[in-house]
Image 1 (cartoon, rainbow, N blue to C red):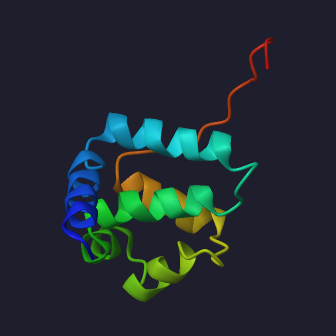
Image 2 (spheres, rainbow, N blue to C red):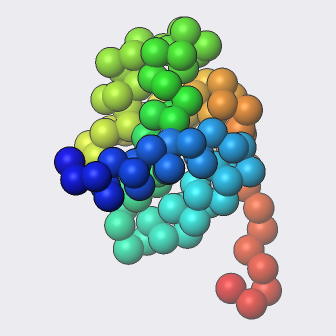
Length: 102
């Protein structure tokens, strides 16, 4: 990996530990997912990586390898697993009404 890529990845991991930034990052991924169906899982994987897969495994009781698989591009997480993972990071799923302009 190039130094620029390394620096970006380190900055991303540090930044995504902030819950407010993680929320914006994940919401943006959800909004853009229409164009790329794997975008949300990749974004969630980045947030999980920032928290540490081992740490999240301990907090959730989910198998570390299972978290990796769940967040892979072919992953298909159960709602209960997704809820556990987000809860461990201090986040939650929410459904909101579309704005009139949308």
